Image 1 (cartoon, rainbow, N blue to C red):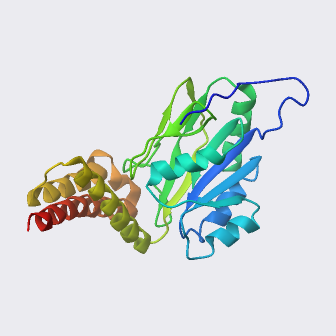
Image 2 (tube, one colour):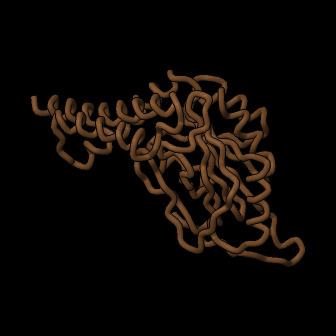
Image 3 (tube, one colour):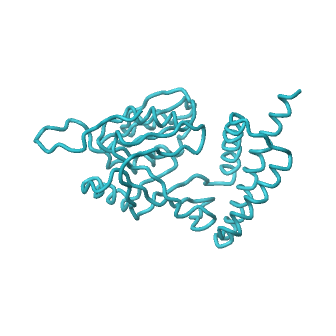
Length: 266
């Protein structure tokens, strides 16, 4: 639910609220949350919403000075909307635990909200795969809208691949958001399994029918799109590994749908 928030007040003492709130959702992100929150030290308020981590995520977040709240998992969009509901700043910056704000991007963000020339800002995201920054393969520039005035935006309620729904003027900042989704190949396999399951659930919920050959076709196309059409071959060996991982993710997404539908018919 969007809230109506005044854009500005200049009278001395008129604002008792933070200027910039950062929100992060987590589950078992002990390896990431510390560095993520450190990169958000320039924010006035840092909020972490956890859905039941069994590692040290919550303890690390509290040690870093963040406000930590629990919320039962119901999907990425709903989880981020809950985090958004806790923010009190005039502006909100939404990050994932495996993302980092560089010093250059932090300076650009502070300058943007000081100028107030737009209601939301997007910036390129530079992602790493097994230690290599991927500048091709469809991974860059990958513009993401993450900074917006509180009250003009919310997240849609899809299970996976949520996006910001906003009203108002949007501008772009140039420094990239750093993203570390896959540090080792095991991370790619785990990520592929999680996301293919979530995407399969969304397809099943839509009632869409798929066949055994749907998965084969989508898997082959995912490889060709990543490695050839999006020039993944320019990303070296990691580009090939990413193309294979994308193909597997697409293949298993539709295979999970096909198997679930076949089981339901029995």
